[in-house]
Length: 115
Image (cartoon, rainbow, N blue to C red; front, side):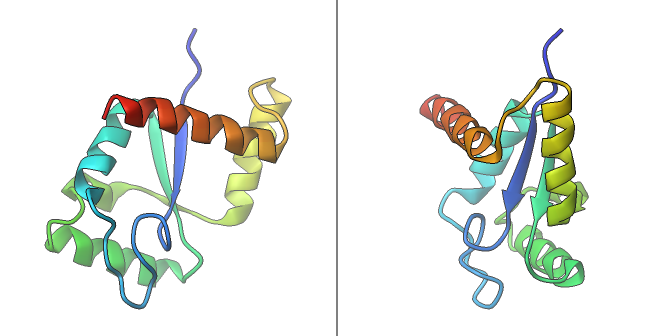
């Protein structure tokens, strides 16, 4: 049985420039649609308060920089990401955090080659 794939995206510095200027990355809309097709679940992480993150997402959707379905992407806190990672390791589906990051980056590189 294939394992469920989970992608946690960082809002500031990854999807947008930062929480102040909020410039979306080039190709953001298409990238998010692509990710939706590659991963079973997508979460959003942000260092700013969730209410601010939600407002940023609403603005980017209204500006057509993000697809409307992204409004339903759940926000997660860092401790939730750590729990997901720990649960994956307990079930033999992950390794140390740095190895997991390397694996995710490798996976994304392979996905993006087809993008």
